[in-house]
Length: 269
Image 1: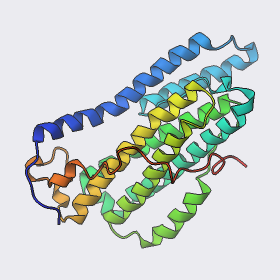
Image 2: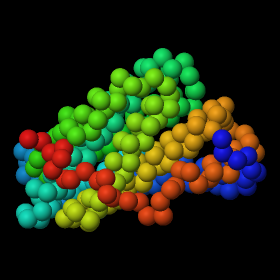
Image 3: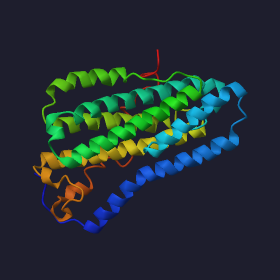
Image 4: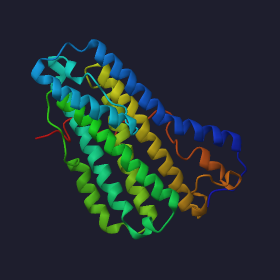
């Protein structure tokens, strides 16, 4: 049980507001990228125009759902284009797996009939991961590659091993933390691995959204382990939160990348 100490509720409210602003910032970055892409992109051939318009519309919708979308992956240099496509496909494979896991979790009886805040988080996060997958695939196809519709093979196997042992909300949270961490670490590493500023903007803006998911889940995990599931609520009774609630979600000063997926791990074969 975590020690019961008073915390500064004003700081908690400020952190909550900053958290809610994160996805709004991602949408803003997406719109900026749209403008940059429109200004820099050469005029397309007539037969290519319909596909490009469809891709742009899909990208805008994905960004509006909370994912920061890259426009301009097709301008990657020839030497780095192959690696860029694989990185995008691997990212899409991670997002596809996350969508599957969260969708499965949402149908579990102890989630559907359990804590309403946890259920709402799962629903919102599923929407965001779906948007991220669409954005990564849109960028991959725009760069000349194929969309990745399959789940990441390495972590799909891990999920299959863990699913039979999932009996409680805490089990779901533990699995989700693993997936969110892999996503955040992978995209953080990708920032230094891709070949264009636009791609770095994409991965650099999606990574903190996944890190935010992980931070939320770590806080939920701590409250479940501490025997205080009633505090998992929005709004919550801030005065009753343990002091660790303000720090448990952020165990690292700098986000690690040791568990980042190699760019080829989820590439289309």
